[in-house]
Length: 292
Ligand SMILES: [Zn+2]
Ligand SMILES: [Zn+2]
Image: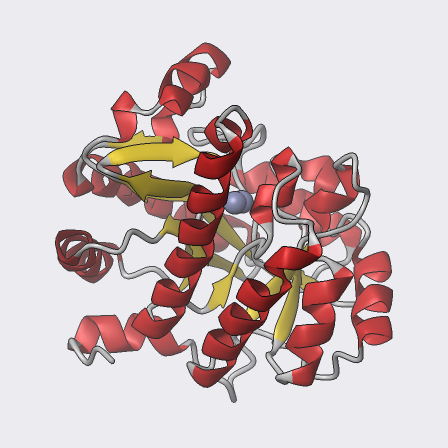
């Protein structure tokens, strides 16, 4: 079974445990290395989104930032904490982030500057939001939209993932079919869009996670679906298994089941970060200013 996990969240963002608690639990579970990947979400209109008020009520609105300065401040002290825990425990814990990609030149510039300051060890690319006419919508807002708008937003969702893949700024991509969280994108009519997206991912050497948090959804399957897993196999896209743990009990949750699904789908190419032989592509490119 995969003995590392690079997608997890901690206190101060929307997780429930400290970095040290996550490290101890990972060690007890038998993992050999982990990465902490809290949300890096910056958009000037993010606090106007319907989702923001929802997050305020749930007390996890700290993950939403209207400016890069705001996000960088939070990550500076967070990364210092990771360094302290690494030093104290001697356990290999890497500094990551789950960054929301926005197709916008100002976002790109701001994000590159933020990475120069923070120097993350790796970056997970994510799309939790879709922007339409300046309005930022979260998956939960998509659920409540009219059918025509839902289709438009879902189309833009996959468009955003393809643009993120082309940017080559990310080490791997989170939950490809996230919108099934609210029951969207499951029909066969979306298959062509999914295939186009996987083609673009493959063409740009992207890697994709199998996210086991999906097992806890009503659909009872990880992200992405078997339909997408088979496409990833066909295009030989490297795959990493993630728990997306927001608490220590979920660390390495159902990794065995995810691995079996991957094998059933025909996936043979598994990605392991920080082996010493494969380098983490993106951080270096950002810090040297070599952008694709
Ligand atoms: Zn996510
Ligand atoms: Zn996550």
